[in-house]
Length: 270
Length: 286
Image (cartoon, rainbow over all chains, first blue to last red; front, top):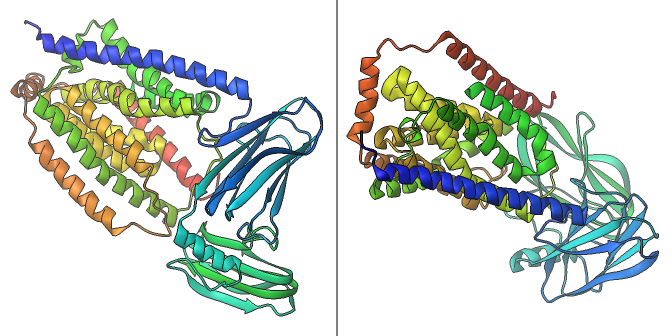
């Protein structure tokens, strides 16, 4: 039987693509290994990064970089290090950071490489922010990755209102389940709301806290004493649109406060 | 051979993925476990792969139809996958997210080429070229149905929610090969579907809380309908379907061997075990 040349064409084309893929694949894998070996630590490629050799000298609040934000932006910070000594990374902003009482946040970093890393996201108002490093002289590196994304104007306005104390600004689809004027109140693990999940259920939670003095925070506690902090009195007063998959069971939202002046609002989406 | 491929794919992934990365692991799966066995068997038995695995070109019309059909059917497959995932999350439990570092740029390129170019070629040679051809020997024109189910079951390795969508896509690709007698049609279909998965699937983020948006119901039904209409418009190669029917008639007593049945049962049990493990993980038992 005569063989149609087109049939050979298909076979040749497929084999050519496969050989091409094989060569490309080997090259990319080698490049990947080389780049991993060079960095030791791998910051995601879509983040800008600063890598510091720790063996050069000891550092105290040495400036790593300064950035200027023209518009309200989400700043993602990603930290990795291949050295286990204690180091501190400090972010200092000249303008407000939404959900925070101060304009400074500090991280203690030890070894965090491979799949482990420290990451945080902040919404920072227009202005300058800087990142500093404190470390001893030691072998190893620390990498700080950062990314700035301009924030949606309407979403920013909503969160900014909350930041300034106008807490009744829930996201679309969320309903209020609890609110309180703290007014010098003190409480410990006070159950303010109970969620019953009949099966595995996805919920959304928004917890907003505004404090003029004292301290207050909200936790979500499950039957098996599973615990989730829904904010922090100093560093995370705006817990917005937190989506959680609850297993079957009862969950309590508990309020803790001490000599607090301010308000707490909790919104739920089911 | 399917049993061995299914076992080594999982074992290989567990071993190589953490060491080499997700992209390089995909290439090993495709080249070593999926492509190599059918090519090695063809080489050893001196089979002409153009005929046995149907590595033949098809008409331009068929190629365009195959590509478009793959694009459209992906939306239905994505819909099924989303519904299945939500049902599993809701009724059984949610899988704990594994904390994996983001792939490097090289791994991302490997993954991209692997899904759009390599997987369609290698998996089509294995499933439609090798497995479907074998089952056409036993069940004639229904070989593509059995292969579609096997293709779907194999995807339990990607999660239970992927079984039904992969089966639907597998049936579409199997039908194309049965009708056109060419792997190029199913390769284009496969590539189009994977292209959608990479570029559209990654962009659509549907959570259990927000539920399935109305547009996805509409797009899924429209996608399936258009895809089926397109598939019925493919130009059949009389030679292709006739050969299958003829072979079937000429060898009516051809039955699957005892060893074949044994390995088919082993494959089913193995894939079932993988599914059970996922369920136990969802129930937080393991």
